[in-house]
Length: 56
Image (cartoon, rainbow, N blue to C red; front, side):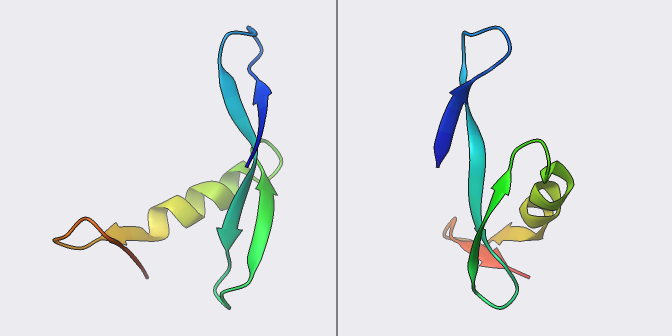
């Protein structure tokens, strides 16, 4: 993950977020430009009883 400072200069935030697409290929999304797609990926994440992520 690549990090940069937020607008206040106090908190480091991820600039690029690595995700896997539906084909299992990794791609890198920009935290602003691809924010909607990042939100979609997060919504797809599920956890089982053991706390492990399950992807729908």
